[in-house]
Length: 368
Image 1 (tube, rainbow, N blue to C red):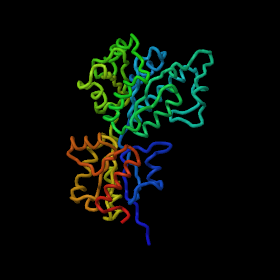
Image 2: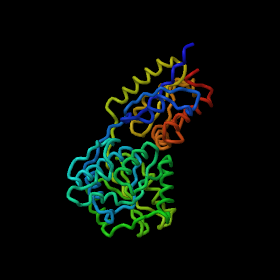
Image 3: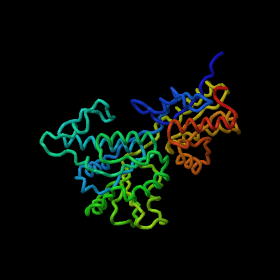
Image 4: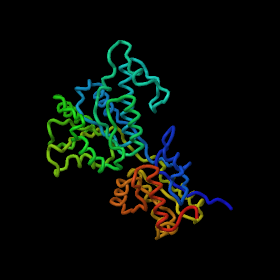
């Protein structure tokens, strides 16, 4: 008897190198993977990224300061591109301090020398002033957390990575409010020059602040962001429902810009046709969307196909899963488009569990 074909899963994201957690999970599902369907992943890059040079230069200046002069009490990185920007700057700071190029590449090489070796200066001066930072690094989602943890271990060993299991921006904001106010956490006071430093650069940099009245004893947080983002975290931390002592000032520094890959809409159309040919009416093609960017092209490609099947599961040619509530809510608000699944966790496991639950509840699966 012929084994049923796996269900096509179009992942609207760039495949990470050298390994990608989604490719690994769906190509060789672990024994704990949820039944009843097998998913065959195909990656469709949606976004192109460019780093903002003036912002990286500003960040480089900040990270070159002695730790007591660093004007922020913590960093927030909620995207892998923000982590990449931070990593690029940390490498440049390290290289400049050492007076030579480091022996590893920007992707992070497991064979590279340890931070202790990397940051030994030939002239006898300390190149580890960035290592003296003892501030929280806040993030969300396992993939971004892993990337940030690698940088932390290499460059910022006195910092801790927090919030990786919160799942979305709203939950991370709630976590920051509780954690950053904790008496057991070191929350350094801002240096006397922090205010003037921020105001002097805000007119020339894409640097914005939630501009709240906060406790003078608590340093603000620096949030590394892209040009397109939602204001959930800064707004939540500045809520008027909070006492002034609870509010946290957040400065957003735009370190990268995104745009849709040229030809993405056509590539998605072709991938959908190929997926439909593979399943031959035996089940839906699944599309997993990871970001609001590119949603317009996706909606254009999907509207006609989803209209052909008014029901769910087998009655619909294409089903859509969102990696989290931000993208789900964006699709609903901007296009009136409802996803079939919103992953409870922004991970391969969370995506697979959501799809499997959807198919079980509707009595259909790609394996027949």
